[in-house]
Image (cartoon, rainbow, N blue to C red; front, side, top):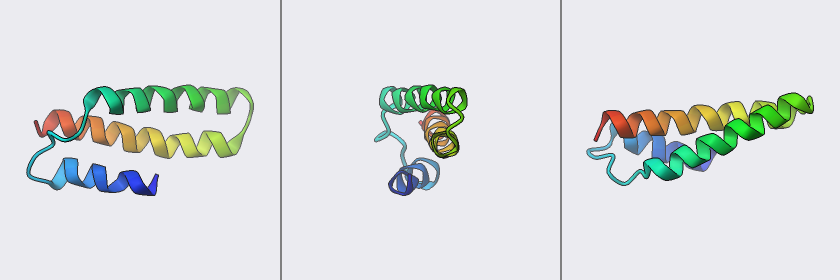
Length: 69
């Protein structure tokens, strides 16, 4: 997750968000949501809590890329 923070910063505060692939980040968000559901179903707090962070980062990148295009 820590390595995804620079992408969020570039998308929101950089001059251009053209380098962020909406298709890729949407796929990352979708997979994080699937893992989130899996974590809830299996009562695995490690997966559940980690996916909250991934969902937040992925969503921030997607929204930033849409807003700043």
